[in-house]
Image (cartoon, rainbow, N blue to C red; front, side, top):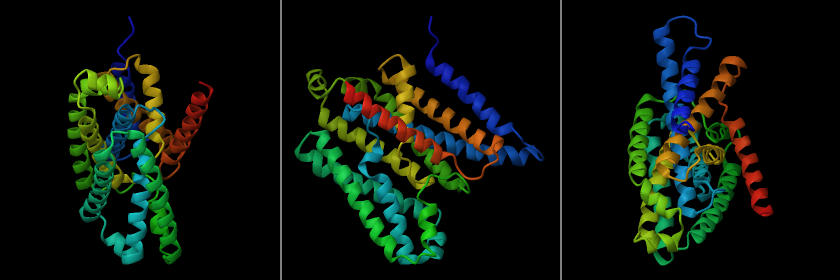
Length: 313
């Protein structure tokens, strides 16, 4: 009998977490575990949010080569950082760090997504049109960010560059626990709607035949996905291709299309990959910073491979 992939992923997650907490530890264990434990929670929460939002978004759109980042959330986040540096300067942006900046970034991203979903899906149920609109808006936002970057003082543009990549150093505890609570609550809601996601995965017409209001359900789920992406991005920065990498691995090992398995499995796979990679990056290679740059590159390669596979099919 094949073991439950969720239990296997959970075991691997616990092993990766134990190694992250203890490998190379010297000195006061109370301080070490508290410091590394907070970072472990951040890695787990962000990985889970990215994975669950990606799997849900792919189910809604019926396309496994898409991620929520295609809607331009990363471009909007960078534009917010650029405008704040332009208006307040690097020192002003640093002073704004904490709950005020977190609330501002989250509110802007949620508001922009709600406006997009409301305008596009109100007149049509064509999710492909929504995705194309998001791609165009992402290009526009990146162009605006480039324009603002030309106006910013070069010495202060470093603040924008630092915030352009996901980071796990100096995460504020208050923001981490807010993000954790929101992520757990939304993940629970999505898991409770797993059967509806199973029906949505069949396509628009079969879902409506089975009595599901496709447009209403898609809009509700998109709002939940947006909340996950917004809080995780506001906490650590933009994540683009990591969800695609995790989704591809999850579908390969799941052995089922049921979301009661896919959603928790994707979160465990994402957390295990990110924690293991961060452990190797920090504890074995003794490199400072974050491993997200390397993982995002691997996710980009997966995206290209998936495109080639679809082209051959």
